[in-house]
Image (cartoon, rainbow, N blue to C red; front, side, top):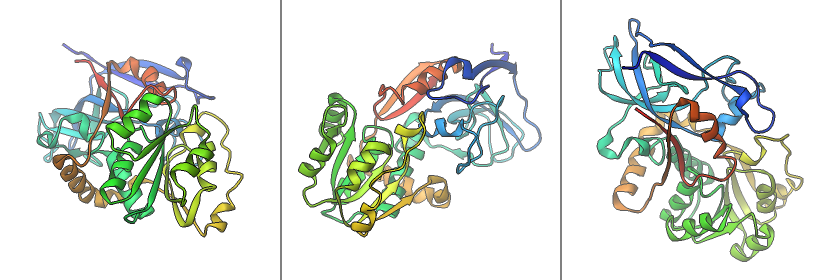
Length: 334
């Protein structure tokens, strides 16, 4: 019988890639819910590139994780004890529970999940924040038209792989940038992209010229750096860049694109995008994503690593060494 709550706490601000010394695994007494609260046993943890930015002390769209605090993470679990009228024991829920086995919540930001619509990991991937980021980022910010060319960096990741598929569903061409021949093959043969470029071996500028001879109408950027600079040189007139992330910059000193004036030349726009701004519209996105999954127009892929809370630091590094395909999830052992 479990008698303690295992937690992963941030104890130092990482310099470069996070290392073992930046974390501490602690064990606390099992939490008890107060009035209006409930306890969740976490079963799945979402592993996301944004986690690396949450560890930094600088200004961002959310406060940084404090030194000594449990690492922030979205998770799914089931209610084990409750003093909240809206949540019953046994219900499966999703929320920002942190990297710990048990979490106490007052229900703020927590949603009940319907596993009839798909298994729990799917609600962290295509039916979760990753799918919603792709949906609203592409359709609301990128605004692709039928026949447009949509370029996606980090295309084999949880967001990028869904972006390309939504582009195809809406009548656009999808070109993905990913690392490695296997990922590029998967994007074309499984995810249905029109083309994929291996940034590790290809000349990005030459490949973009070949695959987008009339220019890029929408660029959904998850990577930044060299991919962003290459895309800027191939923009079609009136192009839209969706700035969703910059994973290539998270462990180094960020650098801006030297050729940003191509935005002026192409009369293009580059817009920063944060999914939390669309919280009130999540049901709309989930409804469309669910229907596309049901009809087979959209395919989801979850890369699930099994382990304990102590395996979180190593699992996080998979995002930066190219070890994952699709949505990376840490499934906690019983």
